[in-house]
Picture 1: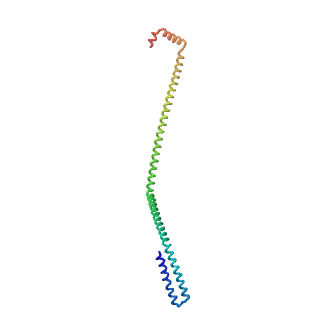
Picture 2: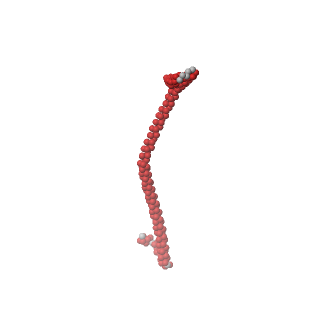
Picture 3: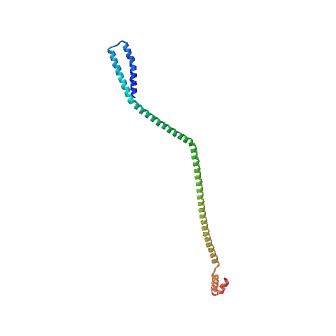
Amino acid sequence: MRRFGWRALVLGLLLVLPAIAQESENGKKGEEANDMGWRIANFALLAGGLGYLIGKNGGPFFAGRSRKITGDLARGEEARKEAERRSAEVERRLANLESEIAALRTRSRAEADQNAERMRQDTAAEMAKIRARSEQEIAAAGKTARAELKRYSAELAIGIAEQKIRSRLNSDTQDALVGDFLGELDDPAAQNRKN
C-alpha cells in the first residue's frame, strides 16, 4: 500500500517537472520561480497525502466492496437457479396439466356413472319393496273381502233357508216335528239307527 503512495508522488513529480523546466527556460527567475517551487512542494505533499490515504483506506474498502459484490453475485446466481428450477417445475406441471385434466374428467365420469347405477339399483330395490308391500296389502284385502263375502253369503243363505222353512212350516208340521223329536228322546235305539 505504501508503494502506491510513493508511486503517486513520483508520478506527480514527473508531471510537474516539465512545467518547471519550461518556466525556468522562459527566464522567469526570482520570485516567480520560488513561488513555483512552493506550488510544486504543495502539490507533492497533497499527492503524497492523497496517495497515502488512498493506499491505507482504499484497499480494505475496495476489498470489502469486492467481497460484497461477490456475495451478491453468488446470491443472485442462487436466486437465478431457484427461479429456473421453479420455472422448470411449472413447465412440467403445465405439460402434465392436459393429462391430469383428462384423468380428472374420466374419474368424474366413472364416479357419475357409478352413482347413477347405484341410484338405479336403489330405486329398483325400493320399487320391489313397494310392489311386495302392495301385493301383500292386496292379498290381505282380498282375503278380508272373501271372508266378508263368505260371511255375507252364509248369512244370506241362512236367511233364505229360514224363509223357506218358515214358509213351509205350519202348525201341523211343527207338531209332527216336535213329536218325532220327543219320540227319539224316548227311544235310544232309534237314535242309534239314525246315526
